[in-house]
Amino acid sequence: MKGLFISFEGPDGTGKTTQLKNVATALRAQGYEVLESREPGGTIMAEKVRNIVLDPDLPINNITEVLLFSAARSEHVEKVLAPAVEAGKIVLCDRFSDSTLVYQGLTRGLKLDELGELRQLNAFASNGLVPDMTLLLDGRPEVLAIRRDARGVSDRYENKGLDFQHSLRNGFLALAEAEPERIKVINAEGTQEEVQDLIMQEITALLEKVKA
Ligand code: Z5A
Image 1 (cartoon, helix red, strand yellow):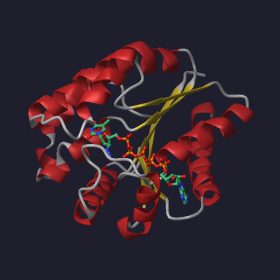
Image 2 (cartoon, helix red, strand yellow):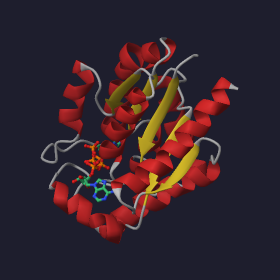
Image 3 (cartoon, helix red, strand yellow):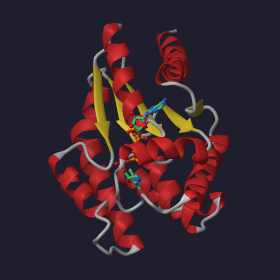
């Protein structure tokens, strides 16, 4: 079987990292080879870019910012993601191109039909690699705020308030509505076990489809 590329998306602190790890463990227990990675990051260079681009004390203009995310993605795809998919692994990635469309596009006032330049940039940076499935962890920002607070992280996009979290959520949901075949909306408000069950149902269905 050729590998699979699955991305995890959603607003900040929805539980993506937790779920990605748990799902990786569950899939390994079923005998699959799994690669876990994240964006921005996943290579030495891309992790260095991550430190720059998420630094809340470093002013960066919007164009530089999106180019940095793209530069990191290009390295990550070429050196890590594409070879792993080619080698037959299930690749689980914490964020990918949809985050660019939402954080650098939709939350900055662009409409869904105005994302052409960002989509082109995504395609260029990822050399055409598109997730076979994207799991969108979704929930009401008021409910998920407790998790964000518990985490206590503070980067460029944290602490922007509830309105920003709503606009992130709406942005991701708009992408999911436009691409329901690829982007599966997962109710992330439940317990870790409940959320994992929903995710595993989607991944199991995908695995059955590709094996058929
Ligand atoms: N970004 C961008 O702008 N453009 C791009 O192209 C890309 C990214 C690729 C990366 O941050 C930032 O980069 C991100 C977008 C931007 N903006 N921000 N902020 P990141 O990867 O460091 O952070 P994140 O993705 O936003 O969130 P996170 O810190 O990784 O959180 P998470 O993975 O969604 O959640 P978690 O760490 O798994 O869980 C948070 C807490 O909740 C933790 O204490 C858990 O134990 C707890 N938790 C998890 N699940 C549950 C359930 N089900 N119930 C209760 N508690 C739970």
